Length: 50
Figure (cartoon, rainbow, N blue to C red):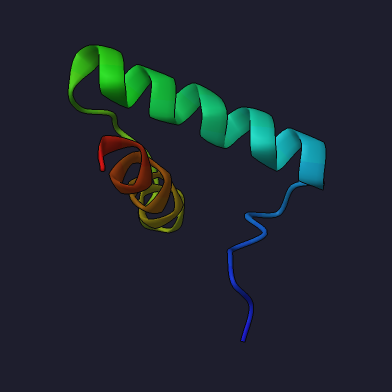
């Protein structure tokens, strides 16, 4: 089982996408995205808030 979802992107594109979505989540408090992306963003955002 993979540790993360690939989200149909290459590694650099995936990293940039998640970085942008986490940033927007922190700025605005909510974002609209797919369920798979939201689960990955949640992991990163929760790790940052600790």
